[in-house]
Image (cartoon, rainbow, N blue to C red; front, side, top):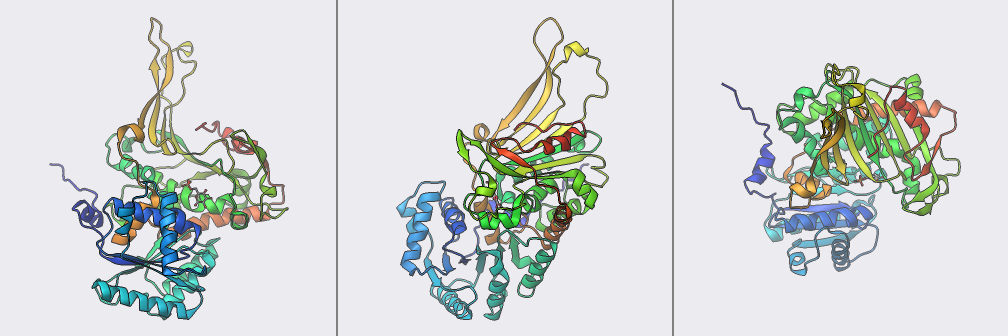
Length: 513
Ligand code: BG6
């Protein structure tokens, strides 16, 4: 008799049963900033409309901009009006947060944390709710250690009662190399336990990214094929048509490898390559992802030269408009060698993936915005159809379309109707837009809700972040030693010719998303 061992996440089962998060107060450091306005306030508002928020929910914003509580409330309102995926409804907003407060302060002013503790205590007392606190670090990363330290000094890092909870959400970038990421982990751990720390990678909040595990492990037909025996190679593309968009000073210090590869792309690799976890539960899932990161073959200096390509965008046409090159963007050093494009080849040295190359590429100012994972299968072992029957026959490719046209497509050969045998490649396609009536929630909605219920499955763990940085740091070190000029690519193109050579050397070509 088959034994049924479902993948269970007790925290999420609670939500299915209609339980909502416990009452809590969200404290946003950097509440006057872009992230809070564009993502956090709208996400909270949409969670409210979907009835996911608890009966009592409060916000305390902290930032340097001088606002009164009323002005801050007005800011929250206008952010929701401007950026929410659902339309503004004044009645709904009146139920939004029981209390909205604002503290004008420098993040390194100890007095601010005393004031914060008083406000939090008063809110709990007035509403008769537990001291459940969710601290959100939406500031430049240099402030993270200081904020954590001050929260600790004010005694805000530990629950007041055993049944209360205190959690901290840390935004990316989490460090800029292995050493700084380890330092940041150490500093956070001086104040918070690992289970209190929720490191955000917003790609994990995307529906299509979560669907990778469902696709692989809730269906019987794909997983048996998911090995080196049947898979030829994997291509992961994260293409953006936008440039650095006013974030020049951050980006010039980061580059595409820190901005996209270390976090989002290596997370995609882990989800595609991981073994089935024993349960759909935070540590079980993250243990398996970590094993993948650790199995990626390290890059020697020679490997960096051979298997990585970095490049910078030059001017060019995007949607018919001429855009400037990277070096002419504001806040970019005129001699910058920062990568706005990266392509690389990874090998995962384990039983399942031996010999299967994973090609990753990401870049700004590319021909279009498209994120997809293409799994290319090996061809049939023996071709008994004649060459003339199959002039266009391509390999089977399964494409997980992460955005913007969310869905999954499978390409295979089909007989062209008629008296002679001719085979043409056709597409079998699932589209979210046609299969599901409701629009998918934004990544931040899901991630905020998970942090409220204490589910860290979709947040990166300390060892995962460090394993990803170990790999990326070896590439950064190889690049630092290289003296050759950084290639350029025309804005609106698909990247530099060097990236095409990276795959053509192995007999492949990049797919056109
Ligand atoms: C962010 C990067 O993490 O992800 C940005 O800092 C990038 O540079 C963005 O544009 C891409 O996210 P998305 O959800 O638009 O693919």
